[in-house]
Length: 380
Figure 1 (spheres, rainbow, N blue to C red):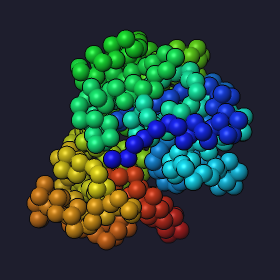
Figure 2 (figure 1 turned 45 degrees about the horizontal axis):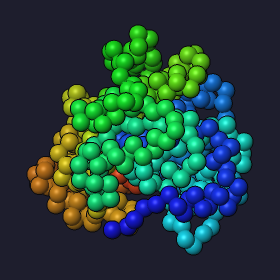
Figure 3 (figure 1 turned 90 degrees about the horizontal axis):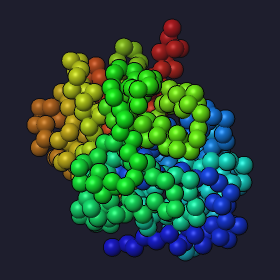
């Protein structure tokens, strides 16, 4: 089993002159909702007029999505300016150090940093100081590395709480709530309605779908209040935020396309709820990496038709293996397979077409949608 450590990144940051000391850092750990929560915090800080760097993983549509300054992916040239090299560090460790160096070098005041995996020994936890730690929804994941019980996983996630206040997402099991009982819970959600929610008696607008997004947004509201951010900026930041690759919807030619990077059973809950409410024919294009709970994921999917694909990744399950699992869950008549996401999109017969199971599928899907939009525009 690979041993994870903060040592390599700390060594890199020290060699770069400790750029993390120049930043006010919000550090986010959890199983699901980390990326969306990071986007909400970024949007709130931007609305408050702050210069913000954001580091998230994995990539959604581009490698450079992982490192953003003021909400925009860094240009390749800027990334190369700050990219570090070191034989002793892994690719993710080097990426982490490069991101922090870029944020400090480009004059960011704040950095919103998402953990890669776990927390205590994650590469991102090498940062020396933090303004705020955030814990999003927690469930079993990466049990071979983080532990096989919720308590063990909580212990790993809580490792990011170091000499700073901590905010915990309200969408937690009782066991998780008890573990973090001494932290601030973002649990003042009074009501959720289409297009928004009420938090602590105040109405907030949302520009994103998903039943758990109010919980993610609430973390940013509670956290921003702890940090002293103006209420108007908090409201505007929540309203303006639109997380990418998370129940992200497009309409082309009267057909709805949804791109969702959900890759564990808990992450599929918002998508499942959204699809369950629809009376339209639903086609789901699904791929899975070999270290994910494929049967657990498939059990959460609501579909009239499912098309199995292989993810474009070295860690992907084979097409035949994915197809076999899909057939077991949905039956032969409702299960198809395709050699690529593009071929699956061409085959899809639903009025709603979903691409999900791994972020690695989304880039090809978005490119196909964008081409379809351009073709339709050229025909008008």
